[in-house]
Length: 324
Image 1 (cartoon, rainbow, N blue to C red):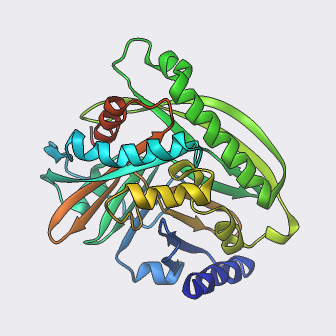
Image 2 (image 1 turned 45 degrees about the horizontal axis):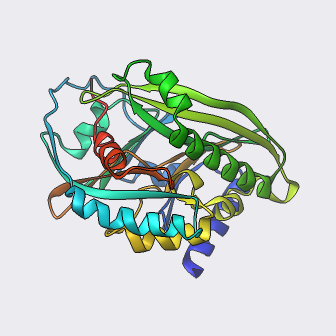
């Protein structure tokens, strides 16, 4: 942990000095990459955030996307799912984010996926991975911190899909749990924590299948000891609750037992600090290149109300690229 601690300390130092930087932290908080604005220019990382981009404006040639996925069998998925359910029933957790690694065939390179996809947050690490995430982790503006947990999705083709999602007992329980978890997390670094918006429904367009996703907004005023200390904030809040579950420590053990792959940077967090404010996202909707093959990592939150068939389908629904 010494290496990661040193990296978090470096984030604190840079943010106190008001030096702009980009950073990425992996899921297990074992690896943190930091790039100042100058270092970013010499890197092979491309970033497109709502208020920051290091990508030269180009008109990407529209391409027809051919995506084929080879998900693990339902029987294989059920093994990890049962590990999760056994722990939920034993009271070791009440929400576990269970994910899978799926080989895909796609007629685009990582670079083409980055340039052609449409998402709130996009990052390309050349020949390593690309992601196109809709989910903000935390934002900091004028010593105020905001988080936007996103939990709960539904196929937009379902009749009255938005209303169905909002009122689904399982999805609602999952969303309440994550909101409660992140409200508690935020209270570790902020005072006057409030729930500003609850169960907002966002529309996500994809070529394969359109989805509705449910989000909320929580905010607070940074405690004096955390002001201008991005590293201290990250080391306190990570891993992100929305892609882990609750309670965090025990749930992490369950995930490591249930999942049969290493997440790496998938479900980690990355962010851009502009010298005063921070915008960061959860690294989901993630395609990794490994030995010349592409893998899509996806999953969802599991509660005691979850049904195997539904969760297996949700994991497959999330294998998409937002090119349309």
